[in-house]
Length: 362
Image (cartoon, rainbow, N blue to C red; front, side, top):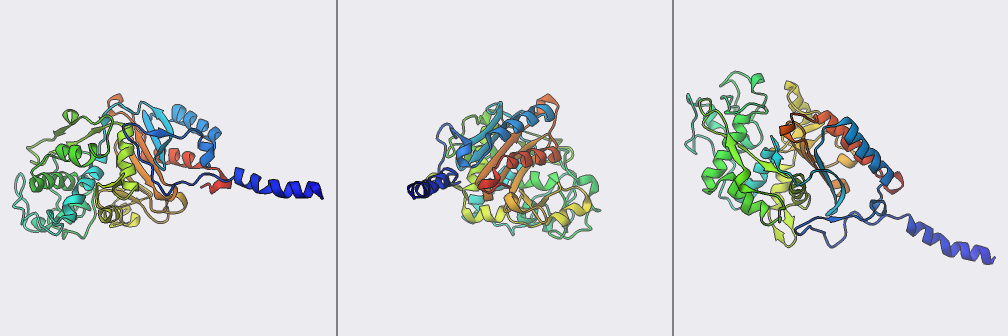
């Protein structure tokens, strides 16, 4: 009988020992000048052995140069040089969407304003129907304007004939939309995109590596007068952007970006099915306001509510609200190597495989 009583007293202790710490405490954790690290990820329901396997896969099978995984405000996993600045490619577009938030919220920028109302044109002129495109159309890649962009790296080669599409009715990943959207933000605020990143994002988020002098625009202005606003970031500062998004625009006691805008910009506007019709979209994703959104049938389990910023050569910021998780991934462009979206998704799958099944693994 005494043995049974002792066993009964010990059973609750065994149960407690196997219960992971919560993903998110009532007091949200934010980094100061540096990120806090998880001492033992196993305490939070992660398998340390599988993390070693993930690291081995990254080393042996990818060209990843930097990766940071943030769990509930702390560094869960880190690989490579996470502080060097390198080219973000098209992740710049998702950052632009973030910058629009405060000005849409305070009504300084009205999304239904047309190109015509802004008095904008381009090399060789825009067609009357193209000038009816709104800022909203530009931010969702649905402008119907198929004027040449000043830089390459989009799906414009697959664009319909100019003037054949009503603005707002057709999705096409088109750098002209993104570049003029950047120009409009600068025009309406009186500040450069880099100054806005500095004041709206870098300073409040206490970014460790941001350097405004390292940023520059490029583009062939004989094709279009709207240059591409290229951005250079470190991996660990990319993680801060993702964590701000995960926290619905809040950073410590400051609402840096409107929560309503975070919801808008990461909501589906163009479904995965529609985006894939012209074979220019990343598989798994639909499209919101310059963010790629995990869409059906892939928005299940850990990917429910997930979204990503993506860029050529292997630049990614992925937010997984279901796990209170942010992944920042880099492949340095200067090395002339890349990590494809398909390979990045394999990295994510191996990361999620490190989540112990007994603790709600995916």
